[in-house]
Length: 147
Image (cartoon, rainbow, N blue to C red; front, top):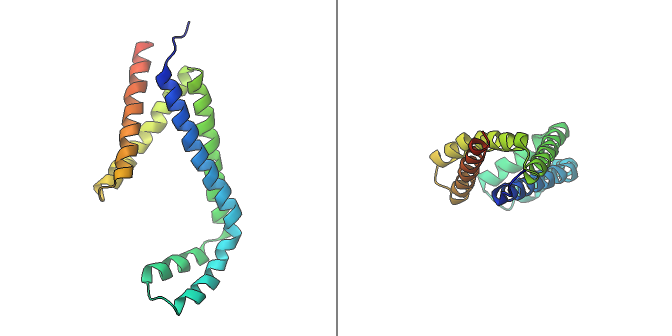
């Protein structure tokens, strides 16, 4: 008999949110990908009006990105969304494989978040790190209780 663990449902909802963000990013890339080549036209229009080197660099970079690369990144984002949704369903129904999977996927991001924070303080990254650390601690506790 499984006990109700509301923490797993909260983590499942967080995974759904992350999956939805990845899904939206993937769809955005599929819709916007072909129009990124129009960035060259935009750069020519802006070139006479601004001397901002960062904006010129960004527009120049966008023009060089191949549509196949944009679509590949979009497919990766959609694949990540599917993985997050599967993970969320497993957590919602308190499946042990999902708890292990969620622990591993949450741990993977910690070094990246620490690296971002070492390059400069960012409140948003700190928040994400705290959430991931809390998820990891909770899942470790849950997995230890089940042994």
